[in-house]
Every structure is written in structure tokens, then in C-alpha cells.
Amino acid sequence: MWRRLTALDWIRIGLLGLGLVFVATGALPFTDAVENLSEIGPLLVFLTGVIVLAELTKEAQVFDALAARMAVLGRGSYAALFLLCTLFASLVTIFLNLDTTAVLLTPVMLALALRTGIAALPLAMTTIWLANTASLLLPVSNLTNLLARNSLQLGNREFAALMWAPQLAAVAATMALLWWFFWRRRRRGEPRYTPPVLEPVADRALFSAASVACALFIGMLLLDVPVWAAATAASVLVAGAFAVRARERLTWSLIPWRLLVFVTGLFLVVPTLSRYGLADAMRWLLGEDDPYRAAAVGAGLSNAINNLPAYTALEEVAGRDELPAVLIGTNVGSVITPWASLATLLWFESCRRHGVKVPMGRFIGTGACLAVLALLGSVWALTAV
Image (cartoon, rainbow, N blue to C red; front, top):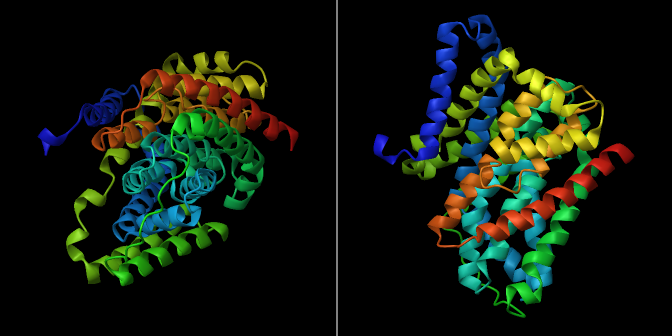
């Protein structure tokens, strides 16, 4: 097992180890550590449930079937396929978390590109850009949203009511730049694509069970059921179906231990650093009540160190009115550097495994354009509505 660990895995383990050292040495009081971990307990349950749900949904070929039917529905038109792909990626991100889009939807879209002769890069960029910029609407869309929802003390529908306008602005900006930079005829090369031949799913019962589980999860969110309970119920339903039909696919690898280790370590390290000057530095960066500056600081820190620690550090000092703008910055603005979000890191690895070359200069340059346009539009929508 140790030989299979990547450099990123060792960083996650090292972060947790550093956090435990802080607790052991008293740099972070034990009572504070227990309080922090008790607060994120439901988040860890949610993360486990939603990743298991998404992984088994992919195994049941739900994503493959939807992607293939989407390409058939486009009838060879790139404009139609573009609209369908952006809708598909946005909905997966909104309801099943940005990491699901990066980890599970990316290989599906790249396989679709191979089957239809579609250029892979436009499909790949659609998934990763919308994994980040479409992650504002619901608490489950991004772990940062769950943290913000708890701080703002909002329900699922109240959170969506606050963020719907910024979300629309962010997706609109993303669609405009995706088309200009990657999808238009001059960029993609071919005038039309060849729709794929639809293939039957391997197990109709698993397909149906996974589809019902996803619908149940979405329905419970709309009813304001706690996200950890909704994710747990949906994952148990689909896991039960696999236990009956394909028990061999239920393995320990379904548990997202890497995410759990990273998040746990983060909530030990960041509070410790905040006690020794980090909070003062974040307060100075945010300045006085300026939503555009708050969003810019969130985006800048995300692209420098990763959006989750950036948001965690800023949340401790941001006022209630500043927090939504900080959230916009850390979610929508984390599209410039490869390490700005965990989803982007996972996406790069998926592209590498599938032999898709992502020109780094183009990735950073187009991402910077998106970050600026999406932040300006989203913050304007937040303050105007």
C-alpha cells in the first residue's frame, strides 16, 4: 500500500501528522482540537457518503449512459453538444459535489470524445472549469459551502436563495469563455461530430437503483434534510443494491480516505496558525467591508495555497457580510493554478492517465481570464440582488 502513495498523498498525511504534533505539544489546546473536529464530523460523514454514492453511480453506468445520450441528442452539432455538456457538468457539480465532476465525470467525457472523434480538450476544460465555477449554489456543491452555511446559519434553500444570482453569473461567464477559447470552430477544428451508437447498460437493476438513489439525495436536499443524512441514506441505498447484485465491487477503496485525512489535518493546522499570527494577516488582507476585495483575496490565496485552507483561514476573520464574497473568490476564482483546488489536482491526474495534454500556459492564461470575469460578474450579482 505504501508504494502506491503519491506525493500528494504524503502531503495529506504530513498535514495530519503536523496537526497531531500541534495538539500533542499544546500549540493547539486539546479542548479546541476536540471542538474543531466535532464541528467537522458531519462534514466528514457527508464527504464519505457523497463520494461512495458518486463512485457506485458511475459503476452502474449512469454517467456513461447520460453522456452517450447527450451526444446522440446533439445530432452532430457542436453548439448543441456544448449546451448539453455545460448543463450536464453544472448539474453534477451542483448536486453531487465538484470532486465528483473532476474525478468521475472527466473520464466519462474523455471516453465519449474517443468514441465520437470529438477533440478531448474542450470536453476536459468544460468539466474542470464548471467543477469550480458551478459549485456555488448548494451547500453540497463544495466543502467550503458547507462551512459557510454553518457560519451563516442558513438552511439549504436559504443558502441557494443567497447564491443563485452569483451562480448564474459565474456559469454564464464560464460558458462564454469556454466557447471562445475552446469550442468555437477555429479552436476545435471539425465542423461536426459523429454521434455514438447507444449501448445497453450491463445491469439494469443497478442502473435503476443508482438513479433512484441520486434522485432521493436531491429530493432530501430540497426538503432541507441535513446533508450528512441525505448522503448517508442515498449511499446506503445504492450500496445495498450492489451488495445483492455485485458484491465484489464494494471495496474499501470506495472510502475517500485521502479527503478525510486532508480535511482533518487542515482543521488542526489552520486554527493553530491562526493563534500565532495568521488571523491578523488575513484580517489585514481583507481590509474594510469591500466585497470585491474580499473575493479577490479569496481567489488569490486559493491559487497560491489551495482554496480549502484559504477559505478556512479567511472564514475566521471575515464578517457575515463579507463571507459570501470570500466564498465566491475561493470557489469561482480557483481556476488559474493546477493546485488551486483539490478537484483541479484530481482532474490533471485523470487527463494524464487518459493521454490528454493540457498546455500549461494556455491553462493558466485562460483561467486568469475566467477568474477575473467570473469574479466581477458574481460579486456584482451578489450585491445587486
